[in-house]
Image (cartoon, rainbow, N blue to C red):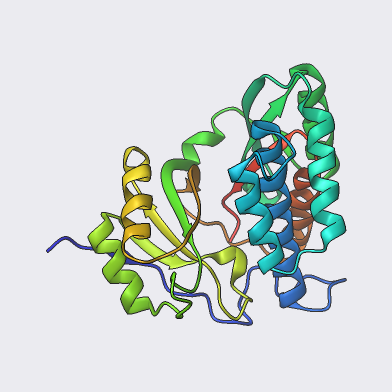
Length: 257
């Protein structure tokens, strides 16, 4: 049979920001990263399909995910309003390559109506937080299809790792692991990885097997993770937060463990 790689769940207490000061603990840090990602997903969906969830299925799906994770209603509405304002005339989708604290590498997908302004804004954020624009950073990543699946199946039953493995094999996925963005959640979503060209097929097969796909997208995954010492790690967290808050940034990838 074909070999399937399974990534272990990171034990609680070993999450990558567990030593960050000024937060109440790993759970708060993980939740803030989760809300960052959901906020960016709201912005992307709004900019690509409009601000009305009844007319934009992708946005309705993301709003449902936000509610399931108890994201404040005001935060959801603010993300949609901000994206609606900046979506007018937004035509250019760009990929910026950057280096962050401690030799980390980052890729930023930007959707903008003014590439010069966006580059200036991103460069300013990088400079303030120990980063810089850096061509060649993309070589530290590979493109993969990523299907995020809810922790319970369509019948509402929790999905065991054994069942997830079986579903991955049948769907043609290469890897399955708990979503590291939700490592402090009691029931993290599952992340199925596949070749970019197989994304649609794998998503459909996972759904046909009774699982509940939350999102499916081609993403840049780091070839290797970088473990940073405490000082650069805290600086990197501030950089990621600032970039996630930048209205033009719709997706953010990095190799920080």
